[in-house]
Structure formats: structure tokens, C-alpha cells
Image (cartoon, rainbow, N blue to C red; front, side):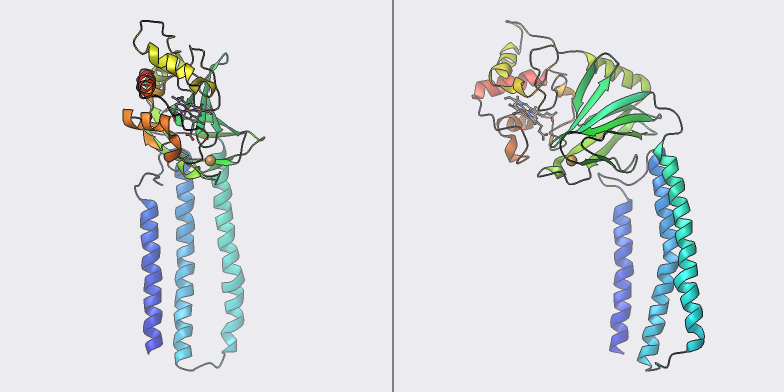
Length: 337
Ligand SMILES: [Cu+2]
């Protein structure tokens, strides 16, 4: 008797536990799994198909298990030969083979559907995995302009992505838009995303890539096409090289003098470093350091003097600046919209 109660409790715990996990995984949250684009929709369909296919098997196994337990408790352990063989052939071979076949066909169909978009992508964006941030490049054939950790796209159309890495393997993942795709050093690959509606979609590096892998976040920001063109045009503008007498001139000077320009580019000025993110339009970004901090004055200053306290091991060294220089540089960077 005691045995049976424990068994039921165990089964209930398993069932409720699975439902809670499903519920948590399925709804809301920052990294939502709700599909918001065609590829993600097909992947979600595959997921539901797998679940619905697996459920009857799970139930059948639970029922057989309970029957076996009951029989065991009755001490009725004489094997009944007549059922054994049929059970093994159908339950152990035929049915699972059919289920696997159905699963494989659905899976191959999904793979075919999500590999290439239905319409040809007009826009192509470079996405490079860095330690530990994303370098995003827009080329118009003549020059490529760079931003970091924000991928702006037009909504309602497929966008091609050229993924690459020159360090370790990263994985590009925006769950609401598509599955994961690895960025493998020496092996650039083509990928695509599409957001059906304008909005902001969260992405995350999904392959462990070192100390700050968890802080390698990014945003996909989908605009109406006209708004996207306005953004791109604005993004193409270089910064203005300030001269003596301009506001923020001292900030620009301090930026050069304290060595920031050896790692950071500000187009339009002499700053042309490529170790860290391009800062030409820093002020227009929502976050800094790959989603680690929101882009507000206090965070920006704190990051500049000691980025290591927020993202230990990241490739920007602490920059012990004079208070005046820090104020000036922060002000200057905030003018780069
Ligand atoms: Cu990574």
C-alpha cells in the first residue's frame, strides 16, 4: 500500500514539473520563445509536432508502468507468454519506427523551409562575433560602416546576415526570429532573419565563448522600411571633427590623448582603432557593452574608468582618468548621436 502512494506522488510530481517547465519556457520573458518571424514559426510548429507525437507514447509508458507495478504488488509474476512477443514487435519496433519516420520527415521539411527565405533578401548585414560583443557592419559596396550589439533591420522582409568570427566559436540566436547559427572562425556562413512587425527582439550568444559569454547580448531592432532608411542614412554620417572653441572640443582632445582612439574608431576623426566597438554614433545606442549596462551618463562614466567591475576579463583595460577628463569624454561621447 505504502509503495503505491509513493508511486502516484512521483508520477504527479513528474507531470506537474513538466507542465511548469513548459509554461515557463513557452511564455514571455526577455528571451521569449514566441515566434515573431517565419523561420521561428516553422521551428515552433516542429516543436509542437514533437510534443504532440511524444505525448501518447509518454502516456502509454506511464500506464504500462502502473499496470506492472500493480501486478507486482499482487505478487502475480507468472509471465504471460502470449502477449509478450506482439508487444515487443509493435511497441518496441513498429510504432517507434513509424513515429521516428514521421518526426524525421517533419524535421527535414522544416530544415528545408528555414534554410533560405521565401523572398530574396535585399539587404545584407555583416555580423562578427568579438570577445565579448557583436560587431555589426553595413556595406553599400564602397564603404562599410560599423556599429555594435544592435542590428537594425526593416520589418516584414528577409535580411541576409554574413556571420563570421576571428576568435572562438560564438552562436547567433534570436529565439523569436530564427534558430541558432554558429559563428566558426575561418568558416564564414550566411544566415537570415525576418521580423514580421517592427519591434525590439532580444538576442544572445548561445555558445560558451569565454569569461563573459553570458554578457554577450544584442538587440535586433526592426523598423518600418522608411524609418530604417532614415536610420541607415543617419548612421552613415561621420562625426564632425571639432575645432578649438566648439563645445566638447576638450572631450574630443581627451579622447585622443588618453589612448581611447587606439582601440576605438570615431569616423570623421583620427580615431581609427579596431579593438573595441565603433563609437561614431554611441549616443544613439540603447545599451553599452553588449547589453551589460543601459546607455545613461552614470553607467557610461563608470564603464569608462573601470569596465572590469561590470564585465571582468573584457578587453578594455581600466582607464584611470582625471575627473575633468572623464567628465569631458563622457560629454563628448554623449554628443555622438
Ligand atoms: Cu560568444
